[in-house]
Image (cartoon, rainbow, N blue to C red):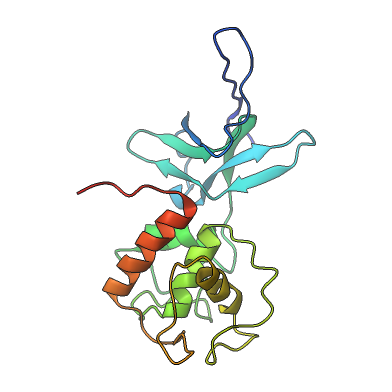
Length: 212
């Protein structure tokens, strides 16, 4: 957090009783903040500080550059602040300098949703595979995949980086295989497949998609 803002956020009922927990609901709020010189918007995070001073980085946060607000979604109230993650070898890429998606790539890399393809590269124009896509969704949901030790599909090896996320996706009914006991994790994913998966994913995480 450094010298960035920290707030103790409270909400009370009419009779003065403090509300700290929203059960299955969520509250969204914004912390006013102006980017300092050299700071990247994608590296800004909302952080929660517990009673022992430990900081928890909140994936459900992002910076609104137009209104100069750090937006945070949470299911409880406490002490929140503006955190900043400095670039690491996993978030510095040599092949995105002039790419149209540079800021978005830095945003997802800082949150650990995607990593590079090796040798300091992100390969922004490479195809996305089914395995890559479900891994990113599982990470975004902060899914607990520690219990998955072996895959259910014949073409998903137990030591593959995407195995546990594929199992999480399968168990939650977000996406099935391609038939004959296979998932085709290294097959390029299509736009229509992504659309269907995102719709199923939204239902599982309790997000209501806008009506059109």
